[in-house]
Image (cartoon, rainbow, N blue to C red):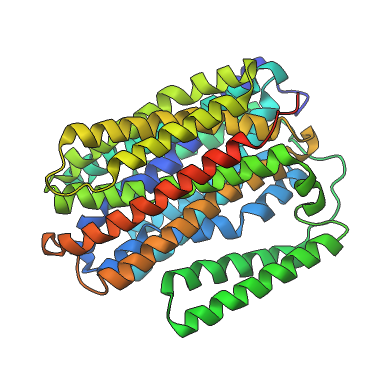
Length: 460
């Protein structure tokens, strides 16, 4: 870390990380609550609405590994500041006249910028912390993410009803500027790897190619054109693996990753847990409003419970993972999360609020217990000069889980709702989408539980 980073500078830098990792998820999740209003004003059909909730994930994933590698080479602070500034600038574009297409572009730009932030935030928090409190500091960042998710539906519903949906995009900008200033004026120097090597441009292009091919192919299956695109994606994955194994300066050392069981199983657990979690905000927002008939603000307040539990339990779980084996805490979280999904199976317009709130409670506690210990175990298993790429790999697993899961949701929307507008009359078809997504999410949660348990003992 920079030599000039004293304790006060460390705390202010951590505050900047917490602000940014609060605001970006807050902005992303708030948009989900505003989607019915956006769809009505811009006359967007069901497929366009599902893309508005998904396109930012594609933007985030294609830059995730390159962002981590660049952060180790050029400096984590520089990459973090670039991402935070670009996210704020993209959000301001909502002031221009809007169509569905232009709003999709804004969401894409937000996703690209967020990859620079989340590809570095955990690495910066780990570098700021001491070895005996890494889990707690990572817990602060995780808590900020969950507080953002907590406030997103609540603020999104309130802003949409009082100031209009554009305010959902604009509200985070002033505090993002504050986050930039905190780091710029308190931390001199930067975190860089002593052995910078060269940036693997070909690997970055191949990585962006196969992730993009998979994402768009999954959203359009089983159309034959999308099947061809999926086959092309598989080819690009094969080429990417061969190129990474042959490269002297790869984006990621696949041989070392294969040998590091703690890191690769932590990545897999994260991929399936975030894949299970990704559709919840979108599906519950639509379920509460179109099937239960609740207002956007009330829907946000109910969804608040799940994210609030995440925010409460993440720092506690992080602190516990500094003292006890992280695998035990993270696996317990996976099991509780899966039980919440199990409780949701079969919900409809007559489902009691008590059952819904109990399920949301289990989902929130489970995810809160999982995230910080999972990250702590993974980052404890790598050297300090590779923290950024390890963080990028964890963020990549998270984002890939989100992306592929949401691509499947888009696929369900395509086949069960098609080009119809989302109205209460579409509730039966939406109910089918919800039930299929819940079954898939439960399966993801159970796989994550197995991956978490079998990772083995974390490195000291």
